[in-house]
Length: 84
Image (tube, rainbow, N blue to C red):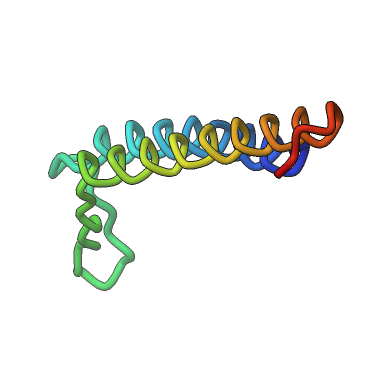
């Protein structure tokens, strides 16, 4: 169960970093914030579907929570001898 809890914490931490990076990217997507590498070509910012990304992360979190609960239940059954 500890591995799943660590995975869940890692997911939450990664999501926070991702949200911060997206926020910074959104600030730099204006024409004044576009980067020019010296060749006269302005680099295009990659587009992201943040709504879909958020839904995916939420689904992963729900799956992790469900797995943690299942393992806790199985562990409790094993400790009490109720396993069938």
